[in-house]
Image 1 (cartoon, rainbow, N blue to C red):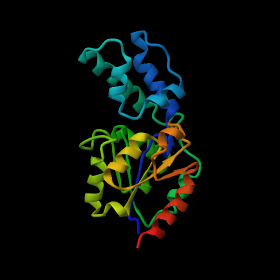
Image 2: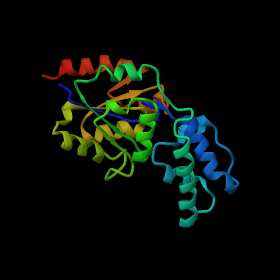
Image 3: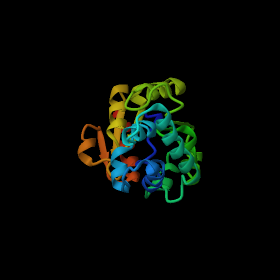
Length: 217
């Protein structure tokens, strides 16, 4: 039987797109960078905000990159759930998963990840929340998933990851666990084609977990 469920955050549990976009544009505004749309931002995020900001700001010295990142963090911290909310069916589905250990592994910083979960009313459902600054390596590395399995003393065949991006699928594959990709998040379906299962609604995860459990002897 499955014992550990690992979830991505942005694009999987919560639609954080507008608040991230607002913070991104605020951080870049002094540098003559054009304004990015929500859809453009969703397509770019996933590998960590520091790396993204460094790729977008025209001035590449370390002091400027730090200043831009600090501007983003300061603004985003104050506006983290202005427009963010969980996706449909997330709250009621999480409430039905009490028999599992549940963790969030995000490439967003841990404090901000917890604020999103707290602000949207779902933090209490998770045993562990890890962000980019609390793991030894970020997704698509399998290291945070392997560390979680070690922490909870579970096997790869007892673990699954649910996410909306290739980072989640690649990390899960490398860790030897089942992967469930959601299509309603920040990445298109074609990017998710290597996942073991693809679902269009969060509550469909219940059927997939049942199907996986049926195959485990």
